[in-house]
Image (cartoon, rainbow, N blue to C red; front, side, top):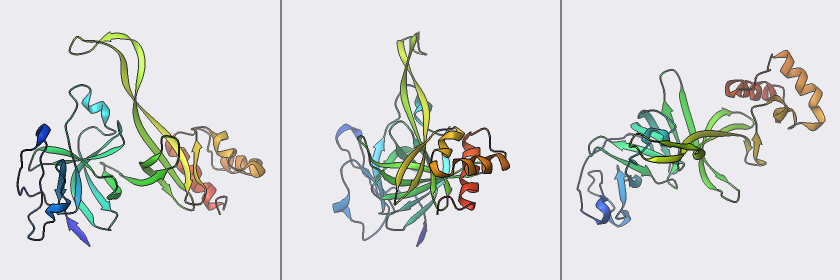
Length: 243
Protein backbone atom coordinates (compact mmCIF):
# COMPACT_ATOMS: atom_id res chain seq x y z
CA UNK A 1 0.00 0.00 0.00
CA UNK A 2 1.40 3.37 -0.97
CA UNK A 3 1.62 6.02 1.70
CA UNK A 4 2.49 9.70 1.53
CA UNK A 5 5.38 10.24 3.93
CA UNK A 6 4.18 12.86 6.44
CA UNK A 7 6.66 14.06 9.02
CA UNK A 8 4.84 14.67 12.34
CA UNK A 9 6.64 15.44 15.58
CA UNK A 10 5.24 13.37 18.45
CA UNK A 11 7.81 13.71 21.17
CA UNK A 12 11.41 14.69 21.72
CA UNK A 13 13.28 12.85 24.46
CA UNK A 14 16.66 13.97 25.81
CA UNK A 15 19.18 11.13 25.57
CA UNK A 16 22.95 10.78 25.65
CA UNK A 17 25.00 12.57 23.01
CA UNK A 18 22.05 14.82 22.05
CA UNK A 19 20.28 12.10 20.05
CA UNK A 20 16.49 12.11 19.86
CA UNK A 21 13.66 9.65 19.24
CA UNK A 22 10.68 10.75 17.17
CA UNK A 23 7.57 9.01 15.90
CA UNK A 24 4.51 9.53 13.78
CA UNK A 25 1.28 10.12 15.67
CA UNK A 26 -0.32 6.71 15.89
CA UNK A 27 -2.41 5.21 18.69
CA UNK A 28 -0.84 1.81 17.99
CA UNK A 29 2.70 3.14 17.92
CA UNK A 30 5.20 0.45 18.86
CA UNK A 31 7.37 2.09 21.51
CA UNK A 32 9.24 -1.13 22.32
CA UNK A 33 10.79 -1.21 18.85
CA UNK A 34 12.12 2.33 19.15
CA UNK A 35 15.80 2.44 20.13
CA UNK A 36 17.45 5.35 21.90
CA UNK A 37 19.18 6.55 18.68
CA UNK A 38 16.33 5.87 16.31
CA UNK A 39 14.09 8.07 14.20
CA UNK A 40 10.76 6.71 12.96
CA UNK A 41 8.42 7.91 10.22
CA UNK A 42 4.87 6.57 10.05
CA UNK A 43 5.95 3.89 12.55
CA UNK A 44 7.77 2.09 9.72
CA UNK A 45 10.86 3.84 8.40
CA UNK A 46 13.57 3.92 11.05
CA UNK A 47 17.08 5.27 11.27
CA UNK A 48 19.77 7.01 13.28
CA UNK A 49 20.25 10.75 13.69
CA UNK A 50 23.00 12.02 11.40
CA UNK A 51 25.12 15.08 12.06
CA UNK A 52 26.88 16.64 9.08
CA UNK A 53 30.67 16.65 9.45
CA UNK A 54 32.05 20.19 9.75
CA UNK A 55 34.50 19.96 6.81
CA UNK A 56 33.87 19.16 3.13
CA UNK A 57 30.26 18.28 3.83
CA UNK A 58 29.01 18.29 0.24
CA UNK A 59 31.87 16.05 -0.89
CA UNK A 60 30.59 13.23 1.28
CA UNK A 61 27.45 12.97 -0.87
CA UNK A 62 26.83 11.75 -4.40
CA UNK A 63 24.38 14.59 -5.09
CA UNK A 64 24.57 18.31 -4.50
CA UNK A 65 21.76 19.30 -2.16
CA UNK A 66 18.63 17.36 -1.23
CA UNK A 67 16.52 15.68 -3.88
CA UNK A 68 12.92 14.53 -3.94
CA UNK A 69 12.80 10.77 -3.69
CA UNK A 70 10.90 7.59 -2.88
CA UNK A 71 11.86 4.75 -0.55
CA UNK A 72 10.58 1.18 -0.93
CA UNK A 73 10.84 -0.93 2.22
CA UNK A 74 11.38 -4.68 2.44
CA UNK A 75 7.78 -5.06 3.65
CA UNK A 76 6.56 -3.35 0.42
CA UNK A 77 5.58 -0.06 2.07
CA UNK A 78 6.42 2.96 -0.09
CA UNK A 79 7.29 6.44 1.16
CA UNK A 80 7.04 9.23 -1.40
CA UNK A 81 7.84 12.92 -1.40
CA UNK A 82 10.91 12.55 0.79
CA UNK A 83 13.93 14.85 0.75
CA UNK A 84 16.95 12.59 0.58
CA UNK A 85 20.48 12.06 -0.68
CA UNK A 86 22.98 9.24 -1.04
CA UNK A 87 25.92 9.40 1.38
CA UNK A 88 28.68 7.92 -0.78
CA UNK A 89 31.14 8.36 2.09
CA UNK A 90 29.77 5.38 3.98
CA UNK A 91 27.13 3.92 1.61
CA UNK A 92 24.06 5.21 3.45
CA UNK A 93 20.69 6.70 2.59
CA UNK A 94 20.25 10.03 4.39
CA UNK A 95 16.77 11.57 4.73
CA UNK A 96 15.95 15.12 5.78
CA UNK A 97 13.10 15.69 8.24
CA UNK A 98 11.91 19.29 7.60
CA UNK A 99 9.73 19.40 10.73
CA UNK A 100 12.69 18.71 13.00
CA UNK A 101 15.26 20.21 10.63
CA UNK A 102 17.36 17.12 11.20
CA UNK A 103 18.89 14.35 9.14
CA UNK A 104 18.81 10.65 9.80
CA UNK A 105 20.39 7.58 8.21
CA UNK A 106 17.72 5.08 7.21
CA UNK A 107 18.11 1.57 8.61
CA UNK A 108 19.58 -0.35 5.68
CA UNK A 109 18.01 -3.65 6.68
CA UNK A 110 14.55 -2.11 6.19
CA UNK A 111 15.23 -0.48 2.80
CA UNK A 112 14.80 -2.50 -0.40
CA UNK A 113 15.38 0.32 -2.90
CA UNK A 114 15.09 4.06 -3.32
CA UNK A 115 14.78 6.47 -6.22
CA UNK A 116 16.13 9.99 -6.62
CA UNK A 117 14.29 12.42 -8.88
CA UNK A 118 16.54 14.75 -10.87
CA UNK A 119 15.56 17.45 -13.36
CA UNK A 120 15.38 15.24 -16.47
CA UNK A 121 15.87 11.73 -15.15
CA UNK A 122 15.34 9.38 -12.23
CA UNK A 123 18.04 7.36 -10.52
CA UNK A 124 17.18 4.08 -8.85
CA UNK A 125 19.31 2.41 -6.18
CA UNK A 126 18.81 -1.20 -5.12
CA UNK A 127 20.17 -2.98 -2.07
CA UNK A 128 22.12 -6.15 -2.82
CA UNK A 129 24.47 -8.37 -0.85
CA UNK A 130 28.03 -7.99 -2.07
CA UNK A 131 29.98 -11.14 -1.21
CA UNK A 132 33.58 -10.07 -0.69
CA UNK A 133 36.20 -9.62 2.04
CA UNK A 134 34.71 -6.26 2.95
CA UNK A 135 31.27 -7.24 1.75
CA UNK A 136 27.77 -6.86 3.08
CA UNK A 137 24.63 -5.16 1.90
CA UNK A 138 25.33 -2.18 -0.36
CA UNK A 139 23.34 0.31 -2.38
CA UNK A 140 23.96 0.02 -6.13
CA UNK A 141 22.63 2.38 -8.77
CA UNK A 142 20.62 0.35 -11.28
CA UNK A 143 21.73 1.56 -14.72
CA UNK A 144 20.17 -1.22 -16.79
CA UNK A 145 17.64 -3.86 -15.80
CA UNK A 146 17.23 -6.65 -18.31
CA UNK A 147 18.26 -10.30 -18.50
CA UNK A 148 21.31 -9.08 -16.58
CA UNK A 149 21.66 -5.97 -14.46
CA UNK A 150 24.20 -3.21 -15.00
CA UNK A 151 25.11 -1.69 -11.65
CA UNK A 152 27.23 1.19 -10.40
CA UNK A 153 28.67 1.43 -6.90
CA UNK A 154 29.61 4.99 -5.97
CA UNK A 155 31.94 5.67 -3.08
CA UNK A 156 34.08 8.47 -1.68
CA UNK A 157 37.60 7.81 -0.47
CA UNK A 158 40.57 9.84 0.77
CA UNK A 159 43.23 10.46 -1.84
CA UNK A 160 46.78 11.30 -0.78
CA UNK A 161 48.01 14.60 -2.24
CA UNK A 162 50.60 17.29 -1.56
CA UNK A 163 50.28 19.24 1.68
CA UNK A 164 48.00 22.30 1.48
CA UNK A 165 46.04 24.60 3.77
CA UNK A 166 42.27 24.19 3.86
CA UNK A 167 39.69 26.94 4.30
CA UNK A 168 40.32 26.96 8.06
CA UNK A 169 44.06 27.35 7.52
CA UNK A 170 44.86 23.81 8.68
CA UNK A 171 47.50 21.72 6.93
CA UNK A 172 46.11 18.70 5.12
CA UNK A 173 47.54 16.05 2.82
CA UNK A 174 44.36 14.26 1.65
CA UNK A 175 41.23 15.14 -0.27
CA UNK A 176 37.93 13.37 -0.78
CA UNK A 177 37.38 11.86 -4.21
CA UNK A 178 34.37 10.14 -5.76
CA UNK A 179 34.91 6.86 -7.59
CA UNK A 180 32.52 4.46 -9.31
CA UNK A 181 32.84 0.71 -9.84
CA UNK A 182 30.70 -0.99 -12.49
CA UNK A 183 29.29 -4.52 -12.40
CA UNK A 184 27.35 -7.01 -14.44
CA UNK A 185 25.02 -8.81 -12.03
CA UNK A 186 22.57 -11.66 -11.86
CA UNK A 187 21.35 -13.65 -8.89
CA UNK A 188 22.85 -16.79 -10.48
CA UNK A 189 26.34 -15.56 -11.38
CA UNK A 190 26.77 -12.77 -8.84
CA UNK A 191 28.95 -9.72 -9.56
CA UNK A 192 31.38 -9.37 -12.44
CA UNK A 193 33.53 -6.26 -12.47
CA UNK A 194 33.47 -4.13 -15.63
CA UNK A 195 35.79 -1.35 -16.74
CA UNK A 196 34.95 1.57 -19.00
CA UNK A 197 36.66 -0.17 -21.92
CA UNK A 198 35.29 -2.16 -24.84
CA UNK A 199 37.59 -5.12 -24.19
CA UNK A 200 36.10 -5.50 -20.71
CA UNK A 201 32.78 -6.38 -22.35
CA UNK A 202 34.39 -8.54 -25.02
CA UNK A 203 36.10 -10.65 -22.36
CA UNK A 204 32.72 -11.60 -20.95
CA UNK A 205 32.20 -13.80 -24.02
CA UNK A 206 35.55 -15.51 -24.78
CA UNK A 207 33.97 -17.85 -27.33
CA UNK A 208 32.16 -15.07 -29.21
CA UNK A 209 34.70 -12.23 -29.24
CA UNK A 210 34.47 -11.61 -32.97
CA UNK A 211 30.69 -11.49 -32.96
CA UNK A 212 30.63 -9.09 -29.99
CA UNK A 213 33.15 -6.79 -31.70
CA UNK A 214 31.07 -6.89 -34.87
CA UNK A 215 27.92 -5.93 -32.96
CA UNK A 216 29.75 -3.05 -31.31
CA UNK A 217 31.05 -1.79 -34.67
CA UNK A 218 27.60 -2.04 -36.24
CA UNK A 219 26.14 0.00 -33.37
CA UNK A 220 29.07 2.45 -33.37
CA UNK A 221 30.00 1.60 -29.79
CA UNK A 222 33.53 2.88 -29.48
CA UNK A 223 33.88 5.18 -26.44
CA UNK A 224 32.73 3.33 -23.36
CA UNK A 225 31.60 5.99 -20.93
CA UNK A 226 28.67 5.24 -18.64
CA UNK A 227 25.93 6.03 -21.16
CA UNK A 228 27.62 3.94 -23.85
CA UNK A 229 28.04 1.07 -21.42
CA UNK A 230 24.28 1.14 -20.84
CA UNK A 231 23.74 1.02 -24.61
CA UNK A 232 26.19 -1.89 -24.87
CA UNK A 233 24.12 -3.83 -22.34
CA UNK A 234 21.00 -3.11 -24.39
CA UNK A 235 22.42 -4.33 -27.71
CA UNK A 236 24.01 -7.44 -26.16
CA UNK A 237 20.77 -8.26 -24.36
CA UNK A 238 18.74 -7.78 -27.55
CA UNK A 239 21.19 -10.09 -29.37
CA UNK A 240 20.62 -12.82 -26.76
CA UNK A 241 24.10 -12.86 -25.26
CA UNK A 242 22.78 -12.85 -21.69
CA UNK A 243 20.29 -15.70 -22.17
